Image 1: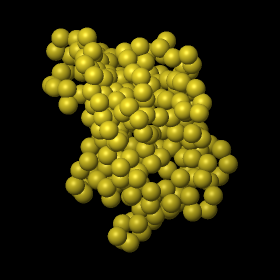
Image 2: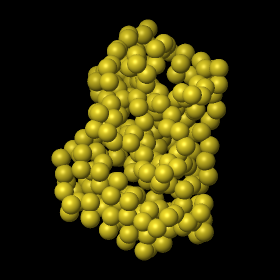
Image 3: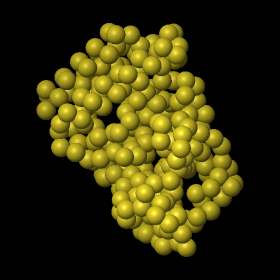
Image 4: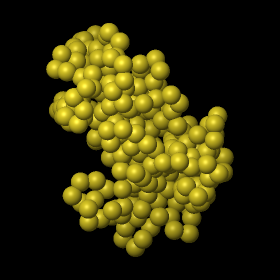
Length: 243
């Protein structure tokens, strides 16, 4: 994967010419595409409403505007402190996605990333290639019961990311996506990093467990019970022991 950085009047755009040939500030707005639609989903799987599907089949993209969550997000919506171009969230995420793609991990292919300076602050956006035929884990377990062995294979797949040192800052039942074959894809690596093995691995597993428990509290009919988490951990640690 190759990268090009073009300066703009307000900031800069990082992109891969092999993925997206023409890029401009207009492409980071829904109005800059002939087709744009908000990402929708049940059980809060659509995120904070800051994401659009843009472009047309056969290649569509996902356009995401960076917004803050939590208590800070109630006061400061979408601005971040400027500490240098390479430290901006979109450039860091773009480059992390590129590395993971090189590792052969199932992640969206990065297309373009942008920041716009506003004095000591900046706003940010990222465009990735849309993964076809995937749904969030939360939606996947809302349908028919998963096939036997699903949770073990999911645990093994998550270990595959951890084995490569992939730290996901918010690994939850929405950022884990399942395709038609039941395979795992992982999305949204804002604030993600590549780290040496450590306690962060167990913390991200705990984060995922809390997320699953929360969505079951929203809809008890979902196909997730204590035994499923035990199967997940079995798959995760079996994969770890086999290394």
